[in-house]
Image (cartoon, rainbow, N blue to C red):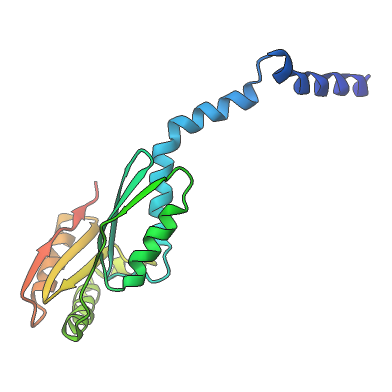
Length: 184
């Protein structure tokens, strides 16, 4: 009896698409995928950018997803990171166009010294050291011709202000722009 029921059940499943019987197992996920697509593309873009091997605290990558088009923004210290970011985003299913607006920062030994000094000043502070534990720390230090921009996310307004103060105390910094965002 069980074998007969199993055979009948398998036959019904196989014949459902042919005879127009409802096949909820097939229709449900397709409809659900269409609804989740923009959000899942954005999550996949973020994941792939964060996983780039040379992405560091001295780089800032941002993106905007508009349907099947992804625009990349930010600043990087290595030209290869710009091309790698574009390549990994092009490989995402559902992405047809990638606009790469990432700026490659000019090579400068002075800026490299400032980056190291700023890293020590910001992440060496006991109040901010917890942000350095992550694989890619959440406070990004962008240096271009002696001008500093802080990008990323912090837990409180006090942390944002402290990072700005610590960056302003580093010698040979011309200006500091604090674009840190306080997470809600």
